[in-house]
Image (tube, rainbow, N blue to C red; front, side, top):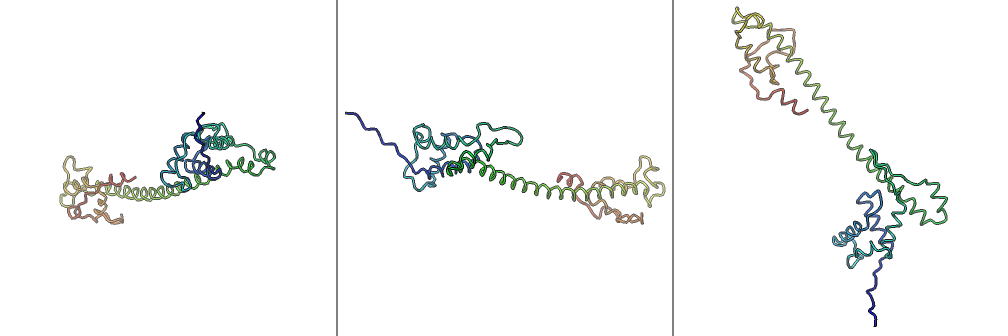
Length: 238
């Protein structure tokens, strides 16, 4: 007496197709579906409670044995995906011509739908990618605008620093007639000039002088205002 083998379990075909399409969408599959990978994916869905109509995991055999419907459905999907996937900067997928598909399958709506599915999938992927790139572009534009504002502000500060240095060279010290300016004093240095040069690259060094260059006598003591922030700190933000 021969043993009767365990009856192979079958599942609703429309539900299996839903699993396959869900795998394609979530994983962004653009080539043939690997059967064992899909099998693991289906098991994870079941374990996470995302396949409520199942009472147990779908076995690997359902997906990897050629006589099982799961294997056949994967093959049907893979048949409509081009065998070649051009790997370049644009990752272009080669698709069959639409007019040829329509002429060949116009009398079979289901088959026509299967053949046209890659176009819908590629369009969705392209739209999603375009939206991502557009968001990234907008963020980069905003960052560029912030950088330009920062650079313009720093350029103004640098220009003012240069003007201050020029004035210091011509100012010297009123309190010491022997030191009229830096070009004449040799190795000696008046305290106001020395302190100014030690702090010239401080962001508040421009407080030695008023912004207006009409009056070159608007000089105050730097001892009244000390800052620990340097111009280099601003450059680090760039």
